[in-house]
Image (cartoon, rainbow, N blue to C red; front, side, top):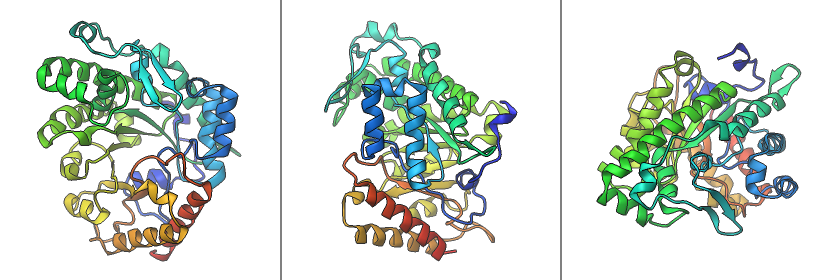
Length: 373
């Protein structure tokens, strides 16, 4: 990992929070912060021609990554890409139908297709690593980097859900059928995904990502035992493999987020991740209580659809969240629950969110953060 991986940062609150250090203010970034709710994003996407063409153009991907940073002054940038780039690089044929979401031309619907599956070709993903490098360059200002850059991947289980189903689904019936009929085949898919995700994140870090996040969108579909075996265990293996590199272990925080995963916080805490993301189904005080005195940072957990509502309610919800945090048992003599906390949503911003409501949210977080310090 080169020396320019650790430039001087104008704003390092996010990385400090990942390390559970004393903070002067609560860092904030938002899942799907670059997206269709922003008019400037829609202009750039129109220029690109399609979502995939936008994601595969490093300069345009950098442009949209920086748009919410420029507009809102957030504390971290996150690579603009998609979790399904990995199966696309396995030859499954990704496309995005207007109004229908992602589809795969060659889903894993037979034993032969699963036996023929190979680790993703990282050469086909070079546009992602080029985008990471470009974003890092574009974040530089007066010899310093404005904010840190987060890279990411879908979790092995979440990727498997799309690869087997061929598209999004409410219950992923095909995936669960394979899980319960042929667990041996499911294990093969997951093993290939573990190898692919590990190398994908490693190369993002090599290109300049200063933290990486595992998005486990569909782990919450599983029963307790199945979550531990088929979702959490593969993520733990990815983290373990990445942290075999001492520089990654010491300098690159890993964030883990399972939508619907609040009941597994204690188990997730054993994953090796520095930060655990929460959705809105578990409170911050509950999560902190479950973690006890473990200095693991929490991230989340506002319901993103609150941003479709009234600004008075947005401000009230933020005040309630910070009041709850302030009353949460402290971790040590000098650190508080406010230190080991990154504000975020419990999932991605809805495309129908008014941009002015996001501005209201950020203003409220900044105000409440200051009030409680």
